[in-house]
Amino acid sequence: MQDPRIRIAAAAFLSIAAFISIQAATAAFLWLLVFTPRLQIVKRIRFVFSLILMIVFFSIVLELFGGHGLSYFSRMIVIVLIGIWIFSEQKSGEFLSIGVWLFGNKAGFELGMVAEMGMQSLVSVTADLDRIRMADKIKGKQWDVRSLVPAGLVLVHGALIRAEDTAELLAIRGYNYGGTLCPKFPIRPMDLVAGIFAFCIFIFALVPVSEFFILYR
Amino acid sequence: MVKIILNQLYAARDDWSLTASGTFNEGIHLVSGEVGSGKSTLAQMMAGLLPYSGGDLENKEITTSMLSLQFPELHVTGLSLAEECASWGVVPDEILNAIGLSGKKEVSPLLLSRGELSRLHLACVLAKDYDLLLLDEPFGSLDCEEKTRLCNLIGQKSQGITIIFTHEQDILPRVTRIWEIVDGTLVDCGKPPDAFQHWHHIPSVIKKLTALGCRPDNISLDDLQEAACRIQG
Image 1 (spheres, rainbow over the protein chains, first blue to last red):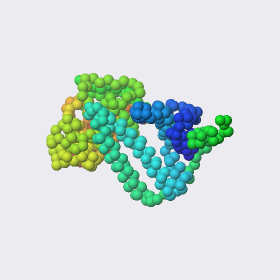
Image 2 (spheres, rainbow over the protein chains, first blue to last red; image 1 turned 180 degrees about the vertical axis):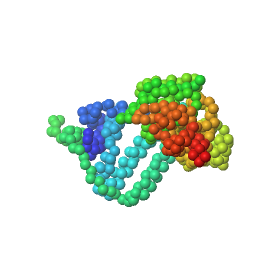
Image 3 (tube, one colour; image 1 turned 30 degrees about the vertical axis):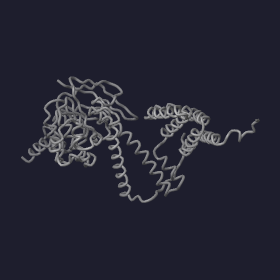
Image 4 (cartoon, rainbow over the protein chains, first blue to last red; image 1 turned 135 degrees about the vertical axis):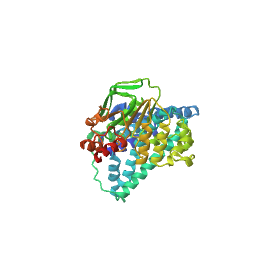
């Protein structure tokens, strides 16, 4: 999906719908199958397995203590798939464009830039985590729960240093508040169709079907 | 005798690729190349920490190896300098005294400056002997004095294979062999001083000295000074 506005809106609609009911989650899953590059995207995103394990754990706990664990599992898996899809499709600069498009060159630019920096930071942290695990291996240390505290400290420290560097760089370059950007979004008819379907799923999740159609009772 | 043989070792991602062939025998090797040429990738592959897409890597009689990563903070696992030294299996007091940080045993390594952390990290790495020692950009964040000290320490290594991956041009140790990565291929330039004529990333000082007819015997500061003295003399 080329247009990030439709993509983000569709992801929001589908996530809310999937959370509301199992029927909507099924519809959202079918939507993913039809309008996204299939579930091959799952292979490209790390941490999927650990995320699914976490959902499995909470689902079992819910099931054991009288909740609807299976329903929770199905709905959460669909939400995770939507998250994976949106993350894999995201391109650098899109948040900035959307921020400006939504809220203009002042507040929108700021918000978009913060979102861009957040995404960039996520990429850096992932790369750093890889190197930390490599460094632990070099020292002959097994990666386990005890590794989390020092690794977390290094990651947070690195993120803070980078944030400070970026802030200084922006200040040196005279950045004050907002900027100028003319966002352009590629529009494809198929994106519009996908967006409309996502919106329909959202509406059907909110409003009972019987409200739309005259049903015999 | 220890050696590491690269046979068409290949790594690729997106529109970047690296091919490496050659034999690294006992001694000190310098692998130069531009930023992004693949020095770190090659170091990690040689350390067995990064899978390669093709080719073969053969270690002969190498039982212990060590890779020093470019960013020393990534190696930090201790919450204090003493703990950090201990995590490398070295005696904290000895190391901290040697690098002038003896009063900071309980300080967090992350509170040190980049230069101090590099000093600490390299001191811990060089405190032990390894059959294969890979140093990825060891001169980064060090001042001239520390670079010289590091060169002296590396120069004292009498056994095993030491490979320095760097784009440093000014202060380097005396080396056995010079390699460089050019257009995605590892090239064996040979032994200094003969290697100078094939070396694309030759430091400008060596280039000028050679042009003046005073070719240094090697790439260390002592060798450059000796060659420079020949001009004056």
